[in-house]
Amino acid sequence: DMTHLIYPTTNFKAIEQVTVERGEGCYVWDNHGNKYLEGLAGLWCTALGYGNQEVIATATEQMNKLTFNHMFGGKTHQVAIDLADKLADMIPMKDAVISFGNSGSDANDTHIKLLRYYHEAIGKPHCRKIIARERSYHGVTVAAASLTGLPVTQNHFDLPIDALGILRTDHPHYYRGKQGEETEVEFVDRIVGNLEAMILREGPDTIAAFIAEPITGASGVIVPPEGYYQKVQAVLNRYDIMFWADEVITGFGRTGSDFGCNTMGIESPDMMTFAKQLSSAYMPISASAINREMYTAMIEQTATAGAFGHGYTYSGHPVACAVALKVLEIYQRDEIFEKAAITGKYLQKRLAEFSDHPLVGEVRGSGLLGAIELVADKKTGQPFVGGAVGGYAQKMAQDSGLLIRAVAGSSLGFCPPLIITEPQIDELIGKVSIALDKTLEHCHKHSLIV
Ligand code: PLP
Image (tube, rainbow, N blue to C red):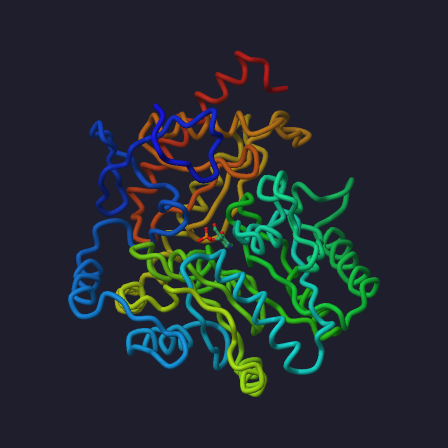
């Protein structure tokens, strides 16, 4: 039916939708009363599930007290200050300073501007390029999409924008990226070697930062091999290039520890981006964190320039801040990350059981984040052409009462709410099993599989 709605990241020729009507815990219901287990926490975000009365009460209370206040040039409110303090205390950066926004994309845009402003302030305006990886996802605004390494976010839009000076380096996915009989160590050494060669070619003093999701999400849940980040950080430190961790998906207990940087052994990132689980998606809010030295260096610059000319109407929205603050309190009080680490191990163990399935090329993940990559030829790992098979599997899962998402062609992504229980993981696995068998049948029938 024609409505007045443009759907995000959707083929306009195929806009068949599920109308989701309500949610409770790890489940949602559609308008026909069908119940679904949320296998992707909405869009990698509803950590505390649906209908958390404590969070709802906090939002109501804040709305009654103050629905809005902005923070431009001389205004503030306590709840944004409290949230910044709380977040700075939790994240693996020492003495972070934080800017709030509304989405992961706009938080990354903020960081691009902070990087420019900072380098101008320290007298290095030529130091402005940013290294991003193939198959990364950093959002879809004009600037964030320029960082993202997926053709679908760039084709037809004239992106990346040249002025941003985005450099592209290899993705760290061994299964898809290895050459010949290369071992994991050889693979890592080759791609980190490529990174260093590019830095030298471009001129190290022209490069401001390297951005990475500790574990990628939307581009297929890529868990880099052991030692990858240690080697990357050694190169970046050699040339004085900042490490910028995009923790929009991996933040807040998602990957088996508190933050993806800690799961992956990334040492003291200089900048971090957060959104999604920052508020369990009860309200839109994002955060861009920088280290104190960077902030301090910009203070004099604003005295000359008059203002740091960036900020959104809803930066630090009081209701979003109150909700996020409550969510962070619940994470700590109820030991949500610790519990999710245990259920995360269970999810990984159960997903790994699909390794023997004839359609499955690779099972990967960490904590409550995982993926199963479907392949046309299990022996060679030959991928399916396009995303149709992944889409079919996604639909079969949906028909059996499980919402998940096909990502990066034909990988099935898993990212249930952090509050999921082991029996609910068993339920999820049972539905995935049905979906995979139906997809296999479909592939045989249409000769899509070797
Ligand atoms: N960064 C990462 C790592 C993400 O996964 C996403 C969204 O999935 C974004 C940024 C963009 O966030 P948003 O969709 O809130 O703009």
